[in-house]
Image (cartoon, rainbow, N blue to C red):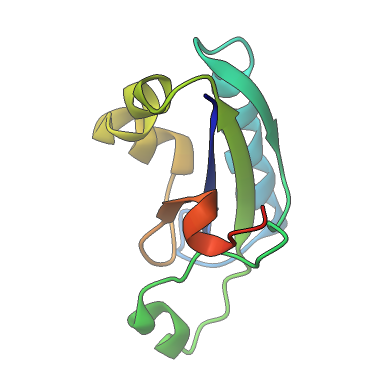
Length: 114
């Protein structure tokens, strides 16, 4: 049975500021990694129907607005997904610099009707 995961992260540039270039670069890194990744069924840049996963409270309190990037992934199994999301070095490199901690959740934890 496949599993869907949703992710939200907030890319920033080398000066810790939000930028379209930082967002574009982060998407490009993720797309390159996910394309052909073992167990990857599909991915899309979108907010899931139930809304994004809940971020840490301190991110909402941050006065600097950093727009989020939302990613929906579908995997053959959770074990396949774990080879990426539990590899902290790979995960950090794919995100790049971020304005706050990224969040990853199973889609059903966000919306039962996903």
